[in-house]
Image (cartoon, rainbow, N blue to C red; front, side, top):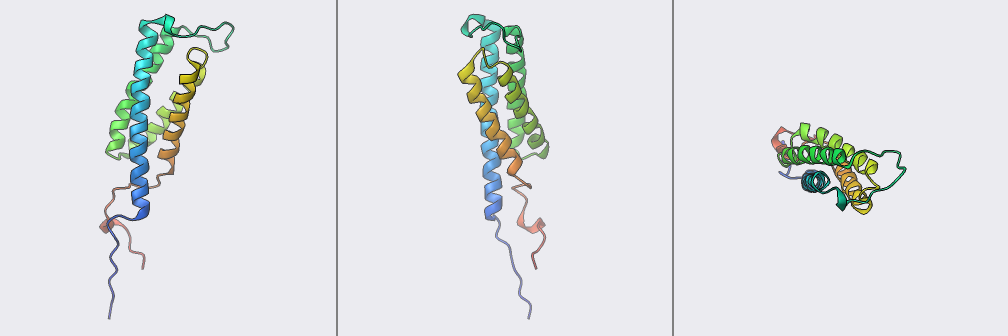
Length: 147
């Protein structure tokens, strides 16, 4: 007499992985949209931001605006890929979130509180994308049997 074991369609690990990927997608989308707005503000209106003297990473504020605008646009595109749980989007998402952290650290004196908020959001994105270990929407039939 043989007993067949069927696996449930969604295990707890799959649900967690799916939730974390969705969380990362939403957060990366938010980081991207806010980065786009920050970039537009820096390009259009330089007098919105704080100006500091003698900062080691002092660049033209319009240049920082273009950097944030480009990173924000790429982050929005990658977040759309994350909604489809694409592996390439997870890898590029970690890289883009890391670049957003660096860009916000380097432009910290121009918009300090907002830079810290963006660094924290990007850190959550990196964490959420790194803890997911496999494709969360892989079907139960394609998984190996645990016999």
